[in-house]
Image 1 (cartoon, rainbow, N blue to C red):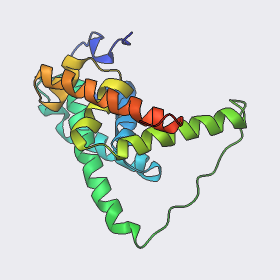
Image 2: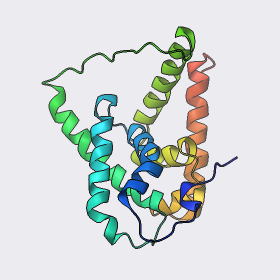
Image 3: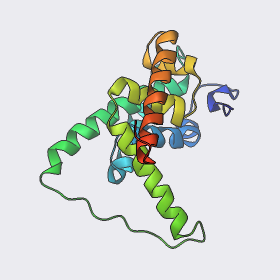
Length: 182
């Protein structure tokens, strides 16, 4: 079942940056992660997205949903961050991530979650940009296929075809991971 889109909520008056940020930060952050921005650069990339939003919010004409517009900005920012990361990679090594103590899930669940997230990240890394963008929006963000087609500026039938293809790719990758490789 598709969760209701925040864009479906009624808006009154002009868009305000604080409201856009509060409603859509999580969406932007997850999109950036899905588009391959390294964990250490996610906060900076999200800030860059909202700097662009701040500069261009007054020019948003509503010809697409706000999430579609934000995804376009996030895709551009992710591309720039990845290009910069590749340049710096030879010179720097990332610091190891620090784990905080919490009352949340135990070590086993945490390890399983990290393993699943690493699997999805590796799967996304092996996809071409067209399939990756569609997978992030349709599967991970649970956007409707008409929204995805609009966000990616592709025909609706093309979006459905790519979705079937990328789901089949994902199923094959899962089967290989479980040892039933095809």
